[in-house]
Image 1 (cartoon, rainbow, N blue to C red):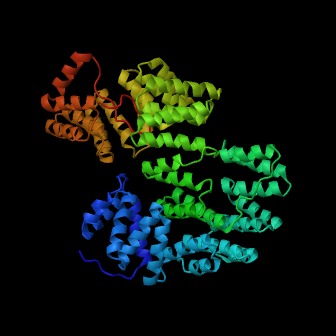
Image 2: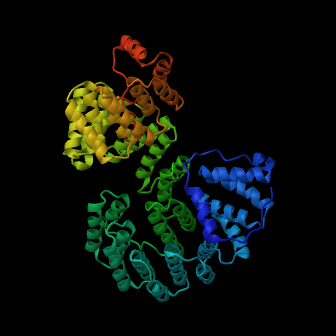
Image 3: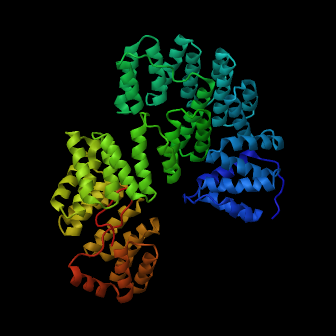
Length: 594
């Protein structure tokens, strides 16, 4: 295989590779053995690297690209792909070395210049940092990023006022204001220019009352300015919109103990890391996970002690279904961190998502034992038990949480909904119905509850009109949810309206073509309207989609003898009704399928 030596086009190439990093569902693979990479041809390693990227396995992709760089040390395309992959994987020291090579080929490569600027800030080479950051690219995000980083480098050179002036000169969209006010205030505060720092931080607070970092910076400034009451009032106002934040609780405890809070940022390196954190967190919330990952990895490299970068990066990995990476980061949160409980809760959730069910339950059980009154820990433990079909145990945990809250509010509807699921699955219908009704009382028109209660009534042959209306309303609220449409179609099936059932179930299959239960349901509906060949086709498809073992046996029986005889045999064996709706992972429905 021959690789061309290319000049780099950072805009196109960066976009292409970051799209590859962010464009596919994640499948975590083990890192490839070094011996395997060494034995493979360059073409084989190149294809393996591309496949690893498509599966978002940046660790494996980085290993393959390292090998390719050794073979093609001057190939622009290989260098750039390796560079970007190493950034996303958090191998920043290696990425810096490649950035130095890249700018020799393409001096205007924006991301390479950004990385070299960040590296220079970390090394306290502030003039070099500003030289690189001036060439760190165009575009709203790049310009804001390079300006704020340059300002912190200017601060590092002892020129705080020049740093703030450079921030003030930056023109851009309205959303710049919060970032500009925050970092101008942080720089002034770190330089001891206290009065002006307070004015800038107050301006940032007015822009975004819900930003924890802005709230924390302003309250800390107030604490050191002799205004303890203002500091407490600032934290208390935030607590009303985002209750029980552990970092706020720790700061409040220090204030109550008569302590003065240190500034949020006190070094250029911490300031630069704050820039990368702020932009990375914002990009992650807005769907820019690819660039967010790079920014957060750079921020973590700059300031490993930053209290939020690690958990924000872990949350990002979790959202991308990169559970092993999230697990490693959540485990790394120190035992004395105020975020330790949050990290343990998310650790348990990710362990369960990664298939490590016993370890997940043990982790959450231990977290709850250390924090027996914490509702978040109770909820997470109950959810994992419920997901693993330990319904009796989940009922006990949800009941403890309900007892703990006293008078429930609209925010507590899920406790009753999930306990109601547990009661229904353990054949305690009266209790289930009461909980589901309570959940609807707390959160009227909640589609999951409408769907569950409505279908349960239809399945039992009671409250048919009301139940059908509930399911229709759920579908109206979630018109593109294949699971809800499956419930509607299967409800029509249960009351004998088979043509209506076919219509809705065909819609559900279009939305969820790889859901075994929905294909099974459509097969049953086809059989009832005389479309036997299509019914067997759908059952065969359902069989090949890895249904639950009990469902698989029923599907195979229908394929062999048809629906009528299969139902007669099943009724004779256990005198029970047939299949129930498909189950979305995030909100279990009645029956569980099949």
